[in-house]
Length: 143
Image (cartoon, rainbow, N blue to C red; front, top):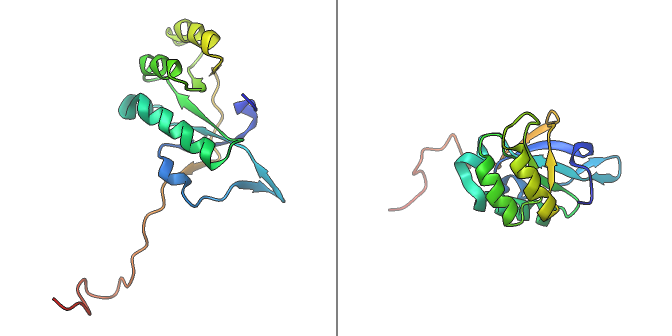
């Protein structure tokens, strides 16, 4: 891993669509690598393929930024994702599944984090902007 995720600008990210059109985080004239942390329930609800797709989307958005998947509610899914190439996982130190994941981490070269920073931002997809809110829904349309 290029960077320690705990030293990067932390944001919460659930959907790759939140990266579309998003400019890099900057400090002065320098772009900052970002650690995108998933919400605790995301892996349990969205699954392994989602995590791997989101990891690829983050890498495509900025090759210096990384995805950290919160595995606290789905350590079994995390084990499966690690076997398929997931690079970084968060699991609290006291979690009973930690030893099992630690073994996978050693074999895959991924990173297991036991601390999670407070996010600086929650990135969500942009919603389409309405055009002409004060116009009736079918104004000007011939039908």
